[in-house]
Image 1: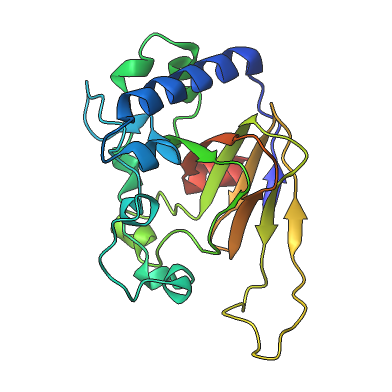
Image 2: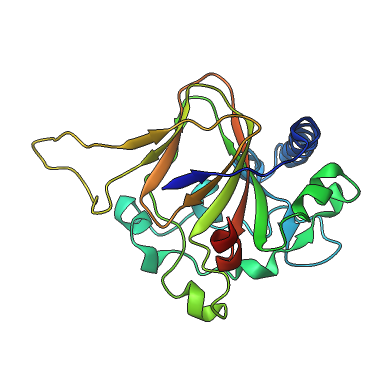
Length: 227
């Protein structure tokens, strides 16, 4: 489900910039309708130049911000790719004004075939819902270049109690009588980079008392093939 990459970068500088941007956005959203969202996902590349709209490019905002009005949206919805949002991720290439002139901006520019960069936060003692990413029609809709079934993850802040969990491909639910389910469980190390096939059923969990923070981008076919 994942491959460890050998990308070289200045981890201390990247960590410093990511944590600074995260805190600034979180503080600015405090007390607003975006407070919950800012504590989970923040876009740092957006669809328009000279913009500071960090919510631009965050898929699934209604799930994250708990404002979805469709009461039928549940576990099964998040396991069916055809029901995922269709997002033209290749539009999200403009650095947020807030990161202009930083090492974080320089870092992003090192990956021209990656799009929609965001800071992903997993709060303490929290588990993401079991889900798949992408949409079956994304590849053709976007000209066959950005399949967007793969994500690159840079672990910024993590620990030994944070895990990525891969579920069986045919998982939908469990038997009423209960059953054992074999999972693939991985722990990503700070300062390292990983390529994930997120068309596979997966989730992430944080068993610790600290936030887990990753820098994430969606990858094109060209990037995946070259990695």
